Image (cartoon, rainbow over all chains, first blue to last red; front, side, top):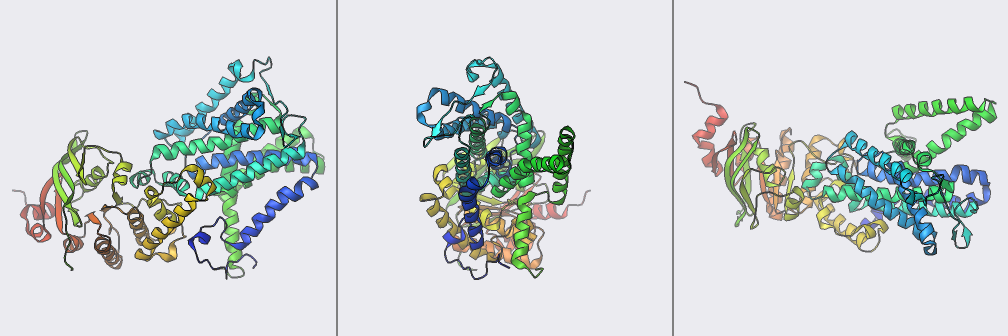
Length: 358
Length: 262
């Protein structure tokens, strides 16, 4: 069929190690980028951008982060919500204290702060593994949310305990808070996600990514060929938290505009992002996007079908929606435990060989 | 066999004793390995052979004794330090990175040769890209040497056992070690695979000049390959000599075949 690498010869290691060695993949990615940046903003209305695409992109960024830690380095974390809160509160404090720095550097800086916090809470991973580590990161989740609720300095002693995003501009367009320009918000978030997806892909195919995967697959053998577990694990925690912190910052400042820690960053967020990478595919950049898309779009789609299509009562529809999403998750995991990314890979294999079975 | 090119002592093990609780695993073991040598450790099950290798590459910490490698004496060290000093090994039960391809496994073996930082790696330009390509060339030389070109992009978890053993040898060779520890490289292989593996071991020793210490149960292989053989039994050192002497040593024969009880 069209998807075939016949005739595409590689004469250097460089071209063999390229990000997308097969020509058709390069065209697909180019097409996706053109649609994302050229077509979508003009075509879709504010509802689509605000209710669907912004959360999808922001969750994709968080899922990328968690996938680096859990998918590539094999360290299970249930602290995602807490780390997103660190990003959100960092960017809030920075926006108040140093507005002159500009919004984009502040988001990066809050990512760096979250990376430091993440590395700190990653220290137990040097001693404990698997479920036990998950429980230790759960402690991070609860501790951080408690901290942001109890210590007034973080929310500037606001009586309601909420943080509100002050308006900030990027290239003269208001990006943050409720007055922000929707198209501008979309462009900003999409650029962040596209750039950091590329960074994740680069890290995964280089020495650092291989060291992470080595620790994930067989930590003893990794250590015996010179991978230092301390550095590999803590760097995974740091890079992962950097992504999640930026996602939290964008989630609060760009999408929500105001946030309250127990509501916006509770344990359900941690589970949501974890489900995204499990359904999307562990250890796959594409899987982070597919999982985020599935978990963001599926509830909205179901709701629209039920309420608008069948005229179901809204409250009943909400309950059916929860049940259906749960059933779909179980169904997916039975059919393909390695996630949507694996399904896509199998589909590509089949396309290469079609119409022959082997 | 060509003229053996044996140099000075590269590894010296002095009076190593290791116990887990009351279990004495190694009892006052001393031996040395010379540069360019193929050195075997044999003994019945539970003799402490694998423990000895684990002590050498820093995975177990002995209670007594010291290890001198390339002139540095130490009692304890972390495994990654041993790796950076030039000790590589393979495992009795294959310990490959199952989710990664053959090429990535071998490239991981070269991680100590790669130095670029997170920043360059994230952008994958400049030094990171050059380094990646240089190390890819080195990895491809090992792939050629072991004749595993066809499986370089395959995930190793799906490869047959014999090939997995070969990839694991490749990963250890990728580090360009001075001392290569092989823990039962031929366990569970058919005779053809064994012949291949023997050929690789001889070639590694001959072409790269790598010093090899191996544990093996196939006596034919051990006697043919080794320059010297160390015999352990229940953590004790029974003999340490050239193969012909070991073969006729009465205590060794007794340990392997048993002695009649009066």
